[in-house]
Image (cartoon, rainbow, N blue to C red; front, side, top):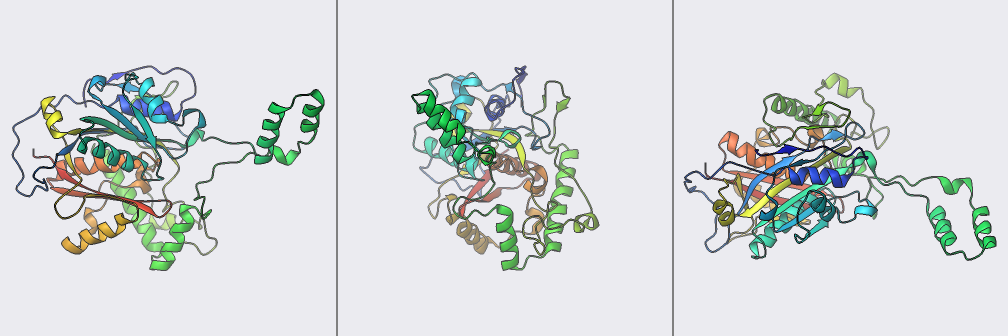
Length: 411
């Protein structure tokens, strides 16, 4: 990444809009096109527009309640045709966080922007939307991303208190106002905290994970081993400088934040001491083998290959969205069947192919920002490891999912 100028932040509290501004404004590249050799195994389809990932960045993923987020600049704003961002825990004042972030980051008010929400695959859907806009010929360059700020989630008054306050606003006489004020009880003052649970089932992902583990016979030991593997690999990748999509920044009154702060390699013995976090006392999901509430923002620049090359950029990867046989981007419940279909054709990849630089258990999972991290990480791994194809697959609340095939750009 180049040409990124650190900017100061007002002393006002950090918000998800500022986090999104930071990620969106951090996109830039000065790596120019080299002579390219076409891959013999390319999934390119004749007559179908190639869409590429030019670059991707993210803030450090931080444990909720630890450190906030900051802005940076760098992306040529006149090159962007559209901005689409994902978010899950929405702030009412900035319901279209994509638009607010775009304006705050200095993009033209003529550049349209909209926000999507699809639980944990919100930025996956943002990228899918970007691909669709480019494939349809409506855009050549789209910034897609996601932001989650769990350290400052909206907390509401109780329903009874909200009803009373709205009635007070409509009361026309002093007597009516006094009567409404007199109806307030202590219980009305209890706030409604946001719950990380599905509305339709009132079930958290932790409860769902416990049920699925029991249904498929996944033991506590296996979950702990998988979590420990994630933290160990993430620590190794972090120490080796492989997490190059992370952008350093300075928090006012704090030190420079340059890395994810939730990576915590432990031991199986220490992990075994923890009690079940959701289904007690017999559940198998614990704080040690779960992802933590996380703050973070991410952004990717997606362009048509023709436009990227014309601007002198060297893409990192192709985002494959269609072939003669089947689409390469799927959403909703099809993603699971799509992934199974792929594995049935090529065989299940060995474990060392999965999340070899760590995953959300260790890096963190800011709900709407993870998708872009996954795609950028796959592109970087393909470059580093000399691979050709990568598969991103993720589930989401409501029984939904997303899968995408990424193809390495010829070096």
